[in-house]
Image (cartoon, rainbow, N blue to C red; front, side, top):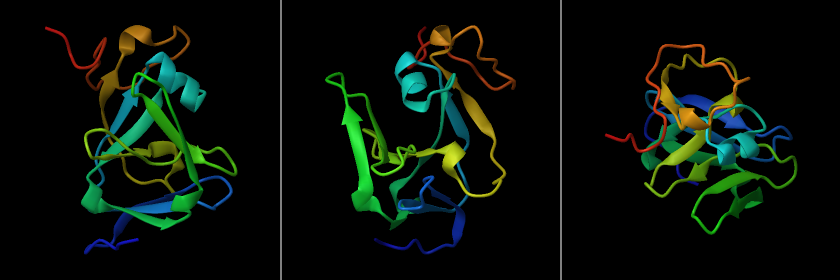
Length: 140
């Protein structure tokens, strides 16, 4: 466990508290993915994450308690092995995908946009005016 040079802008944890983390620096915007896989992993109409640079992310406890699930396609998810709460995941781009809903308190977050909107269920409503992309990466 390493500690960033600057204080945490936010901390987060799972439901049972076994797994916790901190994010330093200015918080990135929240991205929403509406693909069927992210919907299944989150149990909602989208998956909301912050894409955090590795030098701004720190495990505070329970990194060894995080479990993962991956498909042959490369898509993966991670979660607390005890309570099942979504946990940060190191993405293929070398950035941490931090579940926005698991952050402590009410950090001042802005939305960057929505991807895979073509897969969004009719009952899920997008309530902001941020960019929407039918797929990812954007086509055309």
